[in-house]
Image (cartoon, rainbow, N blue to C red; front, side, top):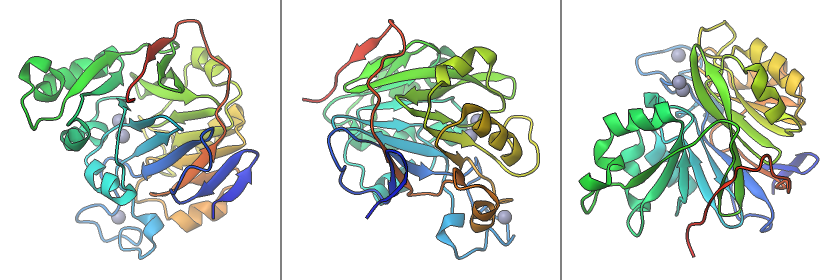
Length: 292
Ligand SMILES: [Zn+2]
Ligand SMILES: [Zn+2]
Ligand SMILES: [Zn+2]
């Protein structure tokens, strides 16, 4: 049975949604771009028998009563989809176009049989996808058997609606590069983040379930360290924060013990449920409905 962790949050393995009103976040992958274990590495974490030290490339699945949204489609997407038995996807949100977030796109094929899947990203991400995955994104190149993704450009601070989910793109900085995080109700997902610009903090006000990237203990030019993520978690004040995009410098149980209960490392397969919020974040809602 899922275990209640704080307020309306419920933690456990993915199963049936408890009720139509619940939103569930499943960590499909929690590893950095190499994944863990790292090919060729024989460090203690890479050789660990603890499944929580096996991290596929970072991605989450968001499910509500009506909607299933994938955030990023990394090179491990196929394995993740098999493991979690993902039977449908209504849309894909892209944080940015780096390989570890997009190189599973070809494996969206089974989800595009009856209709194309819509893929949302900022202009830089969509431009990049159009260059690198033209056969998926350009409808003039679609042929039977190929994945079909309808590109949709989204803007930080401007909400979009996918069925029953209202999603707010939030700008964050991945080193020098502006990329997107996402807020849905009281949940926010900020991976590959080195800094949160001042104008994005108000958009994260009231978040109770937060996911932050935290690469390793040592500093890195384009990702939060554990210490930097802790500082942001404290500033944002969510009831529960999970860390993701973790490299092989971090042993899961050790970090879990070092951190307070309200900030913990996520692991592949972790599922968290949260009641959806009812408020909307701005007037500019892009509305889309998929499915029946
Ligand atoms: Zn990444
Ligand atoms: Zn290693
Ligand atoms: Zn990246």
